[in-house]
Length: 535
Image: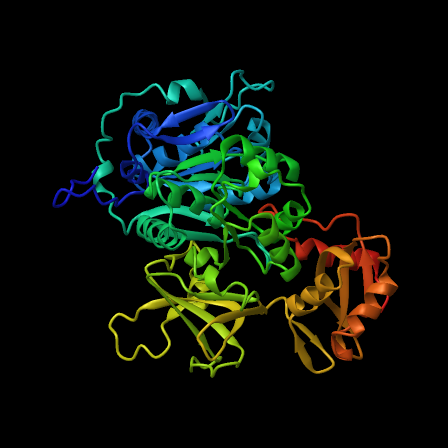
């Protein structure tokens, strides 16, 4: 651990050192019936890091973590950092093909997984895999024969080390690589975003600051730890000495029960989950303790936001925006939520957000442009992909003759800024619909659909059309006894200009989700292609 300065608590420079921010005797993490204090968690992390080091894991080595949220997952995540290695968290919902791409691409020395997941890992390993050993969390050995390519170790052996410092752990500084987080790959195979310890620690301090995290907070961690917002739930809680409750939820009703059981004060979700939670019955014992609720990963429909404010009248709503390449970017002050419910707010502390034209010149208020993020949270680039890195990580617009030039991340997201400086998300450049000579934001159509009260979920997409360029297709789940495609189309015609109206409304029982819980637009496009939807 770094030394204290002027009597204050030590300043973390490595991800695992966040645990030094908490009171040793206060609860740090809970999963099901097990709770560890900050002292107990720190001890387990140190022991596990030592065993990783004894197994040959060194500074800069990649370690894949492929397991659902549980105590061992959090211990492993922090122990990888303590050993000076690089965390590669992989969503446990991914299958053999996607996992195989990650393992081949980042060439890890080790994999930490569960006994139940081992067969998927085994099938994902190439004949000449870089993986030397796999650690299995779980009581039993896998049913299939051990793989001769890698050595299998039980988790108990890894966690049985001595709680002394790792010999070369002190060599890691905050600029070193802490994690490689693979994006969902909406435009091809997933890319590995390289994040430094500085990125993660600066993000934790910034987000915990504006959310007002404190030691008596109970944070319910629902999002995958392979998702930047999911990992942020851990880091922002630990830097404040708060208590994290881990959950691998199955149903929205489970979330309500967990909130009541643990008296949860902090809850962050993506829009599809918030839509489900807004439809639940929340007893006062579950709703009353909530101090804030936060949305990330897409716009929260106005109707859902209004319903959540009814359920949690005492809770502050935080509407947030982020991208993996910069971890977190903006938030809307809760005091502005009623006046600007469609805004993603302003830059988080210690970041600057620019809105620029293709030539890098600043946009005027109301003018659409690309969001560019600069500051301590900007990632180091993409793993083993210099071309993609050069395309997305470019010099700060208007930086002049800085040597070397400061790099910013060009998000690929279209936004605009109002006269008061508040930002509004328009859409991904890749998702914009080009129809009848217009560029149409799918979120504008989706917001209009939600406003009718006739849909539960909605996603607007453009499909090729020889005459229009693209025609608008709206995929929805219907809501209410009077809901039908015809009724929805009539209602939309009262809100939208003709060129924005859907040429077709496709009804599904449930919209597909990505592994991070967002609506999966890639899968929706594939579905529309297979279904050959009419124009």
